Length: 433
Ligand code: AMP
Ligand code: GLY
Image (tube, rainbow, N blue to C red; front, side):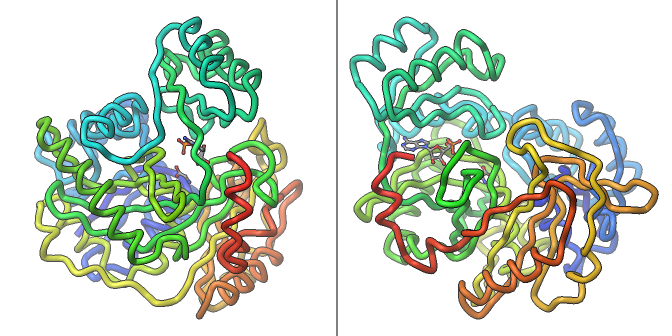
């Protein structure tokens, strides 16, 4: 079977790595891929807005199954174009992908179906939004409605900060049309976790839990990033919380969409805040998290092609997901300047040494080749991931490997997974961030 993966990041490298172990996948393509992915798949480059030419490629190559990594092509309707042309693809269609593409759509849906979430109000007028912020006071959360690469959320500790956020989104239009609407949201203090599931629109199979580290610096300081590291499992997701999340959040979303004529197939990711043992949905994503995919997929025992085909064919009820009992930790190494403007083109040393290490996998995010040498080409560059018998073991293997890698200007957090190790959930509840 031939499989095509869409995307270029660490999440897609983890997907391709998992597919490469499948008993079904004879050949893997990735569009556009990166230096690491090219060791396992044939990387192809197409204009990522031109879904018709991708369908032509899939037809020409006889690709049996396509898996979409990132949200942007899902929101632009890649699934609709593939399905219209009779090609198997995994991911939600354009209507279903609004769950991530429009935060207002997601919040209104949650309100209609009684899904626990932060209180909110949506605005198209700057002045009305400002009045509302002044009336509510701080802390308060301001969100651009549309896709903003994880940067359109401002958790404001003061009214001035909130108003600066509103100005940034609505007046300076920092995120373009994504800021045509804003959400002003109650700030919920608690412990965050990422909860992801496979679904074919009927059956929902939860994955093992994970926790991301969104801030750039140790101790959850500094600006938000795409994610500086992740670990799995997240102890905050106890079996009891998991069953509440399934009953009160995941099932009502899929059923709610269904009752409005939208079939949601693919991956459903709920960004959760757990407060006093009660989960709230902060947001939904329509794809695997990056970097959460890296620790989660390294724990998946089941053949990913079997899962993907069952999603596409709506036969997920016949799949029994199996997971490794080990813990997994992923440390993201970033370029100098990230999450702002960052350096590119730095030669990466040490990758060969790390390859020899047991239970360690280096997933590439922003890498390319220059004269056969691997160089940096993105803000997040590598996700060094390790499996261990417990979280401490996984962390220590992941950091041992990270220390063997070098490029000029590289930086990474030193405290990934510490929260799980120390179970220090209280520190998070002190602040609203
Ligand atoms: P999002 O891009 O929606 O995941 O939001 C980015 C981050 O902002 C989340 O991971 C949370 O840390 C924080 N956040 C979002 N909504 C809220 C909220 N209502 N209360 C507190 N923190 C929030
Ligand atoms: N790591 C957060 C996300 O993928 O949205």
